[in-house]
Image: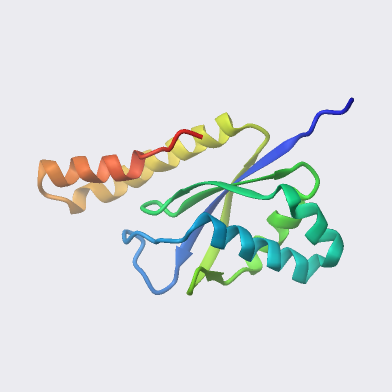
Length: 145
């Protein structure tokens, strides 16, 4: 019996029309269907058939981070087309691959480091203690995966 290996791709999605501090609302189903359609466009039926196990398992609207789960092997299709993608939902956007890992735990560690840098960079813009606490709660909000 052979075990199924997964790869987790940490992606940052930046909308061109919005500032970096503004949140973005994209549903995971919309993102999944867009990725599947683009893989089919670039790799044909073989690429489309390999995307059966494609899942978007995490998306943070404040930091624009997303974790995509796919199988080992077809993950190369996703990582190769991400720089070519230009739309997120209904807006023009850029996709940046931050990390490709074999475990979800390693992706979470990378997210924690990124969130800490994001908080340190943007906390100076907020004056009140309540505003700072709200920023920290919004950025570090992590659903149970």
